[in-house]
Image (cartoon, rainbow, N blue to C red; front, side, top):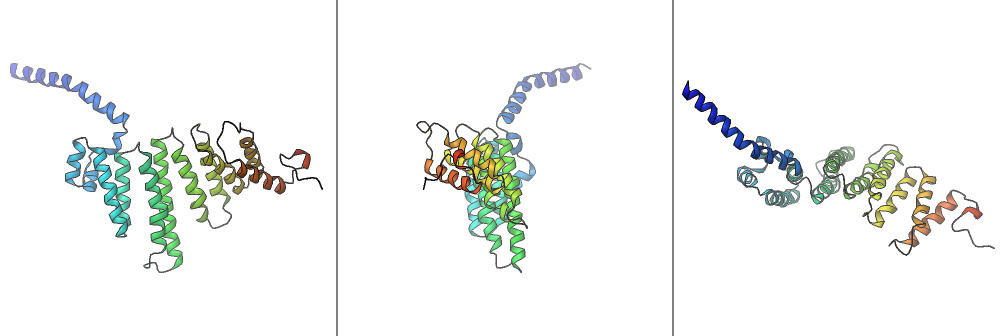
Amino acid sequence: MRIKILIAVLLLGAGLVLLPLENWVRAERTRLKYGGARVSIQLREAIGQNLAIALLAGMRGIVADFMWINGHDYWEKKEWLRQYRNIEVVAALQPQAVMFWDLGQWHMAWNIGYGVLSDPKNRTKAEGLKREHEWHEKAREFLERGIENIPNRYDLYFTMGWLYYEKLSKDCDQPPCHEAFCKAAEYFGKAASFPDAPQFVTRFYPRALEKCGQTRAAYEEWKRLWFLDHSKVAQSWNIIEREIRELENQLQIPNDERLFPPPLP
């Protein structure tokens, strides 16, 4: 009985000693969103035993960089699924790095997408287009997770808008694909709402609104940009003026209501 009591006390003591450490590890994983990068069997198989040991040693950045470089080799060999696997692992290891999410979706939607589209193994053009669209969707889903991990910066919202604007708008069956452009406008608008968003980001918002079919809303947004303080905002004012003039003609705004009325005859 004494031995059992002694063992119970030792176990309890060990648990109390390890509890602060366990809580610290849990908090650290939460802070770094490290929960998605635990060295599970699947992750160990993906990165290999040696890199798993390095990961356990705390060298997440080094492992992620190595996997990223290794993924470029797969691209050159046209081993796209292996490259995709590496991109996913890198994002899991470094979920707070905008660069990996941004470049990862670029590889999927632009590089791999073009690769499968032009793959001579395609039996028909339709098969190539289908495979390209599948990679566009992978890029979209990938970016959604990126935004979930980094919601407080403009970068990935703009990247998602660009994906809809340039790629997903071309995947639809009924041009001009207003729905994709409306989604682009939604994400461009979110990106433009950040105070540190570059001025070129703010110009993509009204352009997408116009392609979405919301011409009047686009016109009002261009006017809003024009009325910003020219002495304090670094903006391409000639571009904004040109867009306003074109929309005033398109919307047939009365001359006395235009910002830029035509010259008198």
